[in-house]
Image (cartoon, rainbow, N blue to C red; front, side):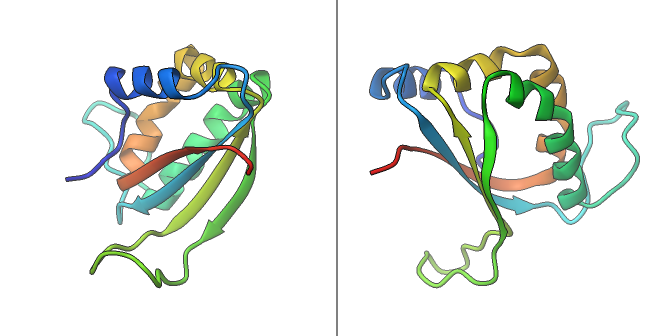
Length: 134
């Protein structure tokens, strides 16, 4: 079953486990749709899933900068060496946030919420893992 969006209970658990002022990195594992799967009535031009995700990144750039976040790593996956049979990812992306509070405030930003249509259209599956430097 694809995992694309976080639930309220997942956000609550994250908030309970991670100190609000802790600097974090959000590790994204991304598997793209062959074509962006936009809901009917969306005026987005047809594109690949990868291109739809690029639209998402452009659309959230100002909101991310406003909370002090930036892309720390963006890489295409060449091969998954250790994983369950058949699991594969297209891209790894790491966003760095100055704090969990900054990440949570981004989720409430209206421009960010509007841009989510591109992310959802882009992705077949994803994982989002909250980390901090060891």
